Every structure is written in structure tokens, then in C-alpha cells.
Length: 284
Image (cartoon, rainbow, N blue to C red; front, side):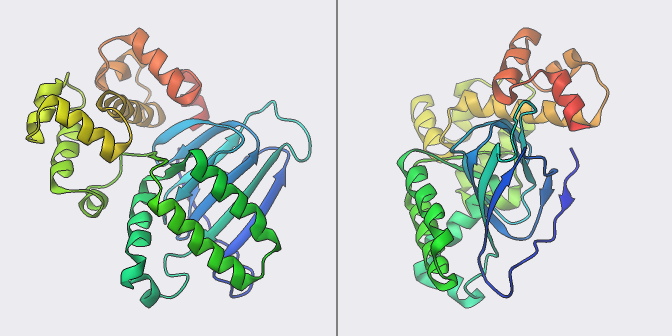
């Protein structure tokens, strides 16, 4: 799926762009823009695309996207009604409060949050509920109050542990600032060897940890198990091949590191909500 550039049309010179959408269905194409984006799905369900990550979404979906991250929410075709799809979208540049402001020591956690947002952040639990309510109340605030509330929301997300990074298939440059040298080595090994059968003992040795310690470390960094991330990396590669080649599904399965076609179909359907062939048709 090819991403297109979107020019955000602002409202005057305001730093924060706040919009409420009410549509029959979300059909905005896969796109990217320089602004960060915080999107809350109030009503709708379908497929969410963030980078190379694809998953189902439903009411309450809340995602923070970094600058230039390609994305779209594609509503289910069976949705009906002029307001079947509703969302609140907040967009702002990284230096929306001025470049000097972002460099203040007090803003360190926000800078780190913006780095993590390059992977797309799915916000969960009580943090999601709190942020969603803050976003709803912004509709009645003045521009200045809205700016302050966005800062409060970003700080709340930054210190929360209720999140999931969506697209771990991001650049090594991003990883160099996001995580430690140890994790860069681990991730580089996974990207180089994901087509192979990687034993837990092998990847733990790369991190110079015992298997048990590695599992704890990996879960703390990624919020996912080692097996889940390996499956995601392989599925991301499979998605890329489905979009860009005409190879048969079985060949893509084995080329992506899966050893069993039946399991590949099951994992693909669980992650995307559709079969590999349906995904290929949608992506083109």
C-alpha cells in the first residue's frame, strides 16, 4: 500500500489542530504528514494501518502517531448511517510550543514520547479512558486552554505504562535513540535472522542474558513477548511481499520465516482480520 503526502490545512495560526469527524465510513487513504497525531475512534470498526503494522480497531481505539508515520483507519464496509464513523483528531508539530520549549529539561519525557511515537503508540487501560475524556472536553476550550491540555495529555501518556508500540519494524536510526545498545543488537539480530528458527537461548546470548532474564527484559522494552514480536516481524515481511510481489502465499509463508502454512494463515488472520489473499487485494 503506497502512502501519500497530506498537507494539513490549519485553522489560522493555531498550534493545535482539533477536529471532530462524523462520516458514513472512514475511507481516508494511507497517508503521512509532518505533524504528530492523536486519534480517538468514537464510533466505527475496521482495519488500522500504522507503518507496516495492520490490526483490527473498534470504538475506543486511541493512537499517538509520530511525524511522517504513514497511517489510515479503514472502516468496515457494512457500516451504515451518515454518522456511523466518528473520531476526534488532534494534530500538532513537534515544536508546537516553540523549538526552545521542547529542549527544556522538563520536556525530556515528552521528547522521549515523540521518539516512541515513530512506532505508533496504542494507548490502553485507564490511561486511554483519561486521555479520551480530556480530548472530548477540548471541544469547549479556548485555544490557549487547549494547548495547555494537550501538554497535560502528552505528559500523562509519557509516564504511563499502559501502551503498546505498534510497528517495531522501524529504522535503526530510531532505535539508536529509543533504546539501549543491548536492544539494538537484539533487534538487529532478529531483523537479520527472522527467516530462521531462532532459539530463545540464542537470542538471549546476543543480549548476554539468561533466557529467563531475557524474557523479562524483552517484555519490559517492547510490551510484548519474544514470540509475539518474532511473529509480528515475520508477518510484516509477509505483508510487504503480498503488496509488492505476485508470489504464491505458500512461498511467502516460508520466505517470511514461517515453517507451517496452516499456522501462517491462522496468525495472519488473527493479526489482520483477513486472509493473505484478501489483504493483497486490499493493498492494491
